[in-house]
Image 1: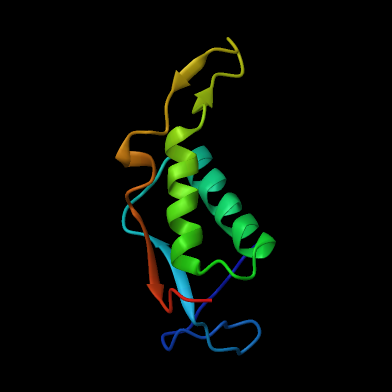
Image 2: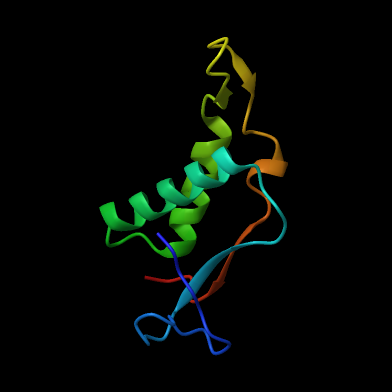
Length: 98
């Protein structure tokens, strides 16, 4: 899924005005970023009454309380996603409502 945005916050491919962006303020480890983004979008899609801000808060809590990253070679827990380095950089910019 590739997205491109112009300087006015418009979806460059569809020309629609964007109401909110989920951004990262610094580089984030790939698997946690993928998990956070996918779960955030899943929560928004699953519950129309849930605001974007609530979906992000719930997703961050889900990530912090989750199992973390399991090493595929040893099948052992390598690290937990509870540390802020995995979820703190994400910010919702724009309209945090529905």
